[in-house]
Image 1 (cartoon, helix red, strand yellow):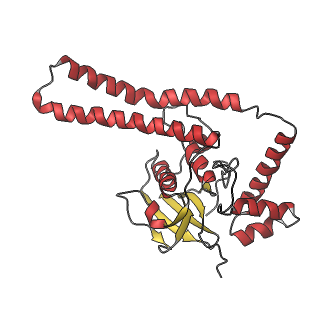
Image 2 (cartoon, rainbow, N blue to C red):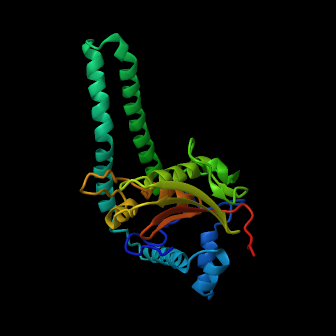
Length: 292
């Protein structure tokens, strides 16, 4: 598969780990190990090959590491933070407007008391669904705020990759015995968001989940078959708090999935050609090894 370079970077890992500085007994961070090897004189290509990654991923990690270090030494704040804050506020308002209006509408209907008795249960159900969506958006804000402040609580442990599969979806294929060193709740949310993103317009003809164990990493891949997603939409997906002007619904998009994957010691990204798009997340293996 040829990656769609104009749609999105090969990998979209961004920022530093957000679960605080690792203490004694903390899990090793494969990303930091790759960066330190390169800074120690190893070639990017060699480090990437040993870690089972694309060179572009390792190069991006090195750049992020050195940029952050330079900014810290020079006491130079990130000039994009204020802009991202404003975009976030606009995106969040956009995301809650519809469920809030729906909830208010059904509340008004119930308050009027003119609703036939046989419609009361369904109306309460619709009101509950709107409130659940509002709760979901609120939780997104909590996760994003915790991630940006370095206060996201992450409890990593070895779990089956199958435990991260969205409920009710088709069984995945591939290395089904693979185990992942991760926080199962947060990782499952990342996979769920990738699965949902793969269903965006134009509607795909097929979606499937694949698991691939590379030894160092376990990769969960959502493979979408069908008409390509427009490049502008793909770009907006990974932009912080971005959304399209054509009402396609892209808002916080996969920015949260990316932030969570960073906290989990992994990375997310996508590849697309004329027939398929692959949304993937790579998470550390509990026992990193080199597969022959």
